[in-house]
Picture 1: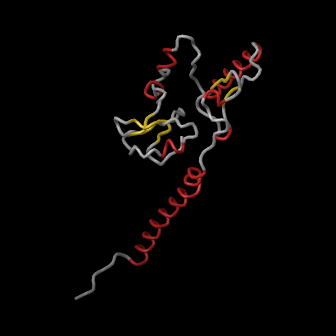
Picture 2 (picture 1 turned 60 degrees about the vertical axis):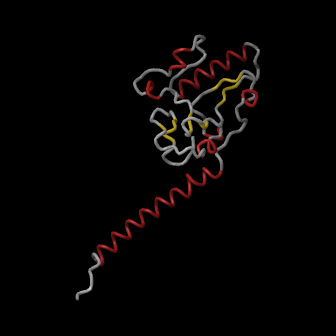
Length: 175
């Protein structure tokens, strides 16, 4: 997820969530998400999305949807484990006659934290973008404007410090 600082939180485990205490409901997170995941919640006036039960995951439990899935088609684990499991499932599907089966992990967004198996190899059939990418405005903000702002803030503080050490505090004229 790519959004304005403070509205989106990415935990160490890779789960991305909306921080409701900082969300102002502007919708920039939805604009920056190539998958159109965050949605505006009319009652709260804020953005929301599936949290992957981050509170459960942080204490070593699996998300509720994984636990409740009666068929076992939903799995949870590290990215590497899920890619390995996904590739095994794709191989199985291809042996069963689904020649176009594929693992959906688009490179335009450096992969996703949710690995999806497509039985027919057409992401658009599953309401997934064919070639998702991060919008240029978000990349510009994160890679150029934001770092320049950090450097400018640091230079301003350094300038104030240097001025204070060279000239000291301003003293009123003697009367």
